Picture 1 (tube, rainbow, N blue to C red):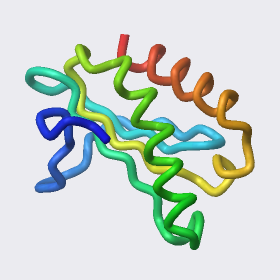
Picture 2: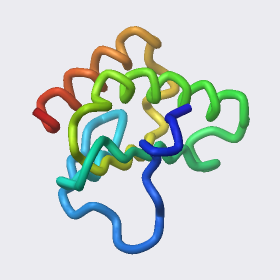
Picture 3: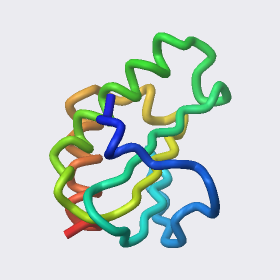
Picture 4: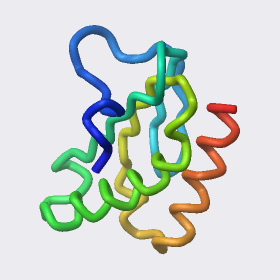
Length: 102
C-alpha cells in the first residue's frame, strides 16, 4: 500500500493524459510535490477480492520505484492483466511508467 502522502485523492477530475495498454489504462498529469497514485481494480475484472488485492499489491510495488516523480497517476487494471505472469506484468508496468514519467 502506498503511504498516505502518496495516495491520489478522488475529488475532482481525473488526470487528463490517457495511455491505453493491453493490461492497463494509465491516466497521468504533472502535479505538485511527490507522486500521487491510485490503483483501480473493478469487480468486473475479477470477482474475487483476493485476486484484486494481490493485483493492487503487485502494482503498488512498481509505483514505489517512482515515488520521487511529481505526477498524479491513476492505474485502471484490465482483465488481461490477471492472466499474465507476475514478473512479466511488473516489467511491463515498470517500463510503461518509466517512459511516461521520465
